[in-house]
Length: 237
Ligand code: SF4
Image (cartoon, rainbow, N blue to C red):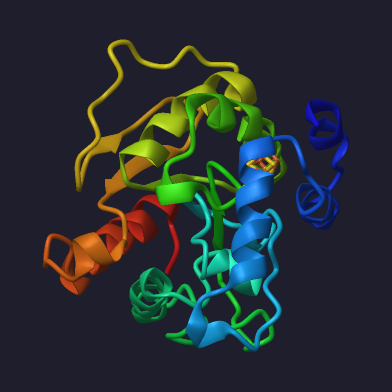
């Protein structure tokens, strides 16, 4: 799997390769079981039930790094943050920021286009309880590292959604940018900002999970502030 990731010469090649990954037995079993049993509301739909690749442009100056696909969102539709409440909140904000051409993301063929933005997750398969194990995180890391390598020429800012994504960024620094991560690691928080040399800036943002958005811990205004800052740092109009 590491070799396959390293061989990917462009994003289309990488997306195809990651979609065919079976490296984590527990996650393969879970993604397929969810796709078989389905949620009642989606009973008539064919679930994707495979790893979910990144989404967006190859010349992105901004990247959003999430945790993992949702069982009945990305794992159902085959597109990251697509078809669930988290995606509703995220894409509404991206549309307000001018980084998406529409405020919704409901299906892989819904006409969504991103501008200057790539979205990907630290783990590419839906995990039970949204909790990948450390071994699964590390097993999946080569896909993330290769994806960042492929967009490295333009990438200026990474927005980490939640503490898991924030922590997943530090190994990227070493693997892609040849840099030693800061020690101690900067703490995650909403609005946290780490600025490196010859590496993208890292911004912390609470995850767009229902747990955060339904309770008001993360509001649309807070998302607007983060994406406004990301655009400013990345030089996106
Ligand atoms: S989580 Fe990543 S490494 Fe594991 S099976 Fe899915 S795509 Fe492969």
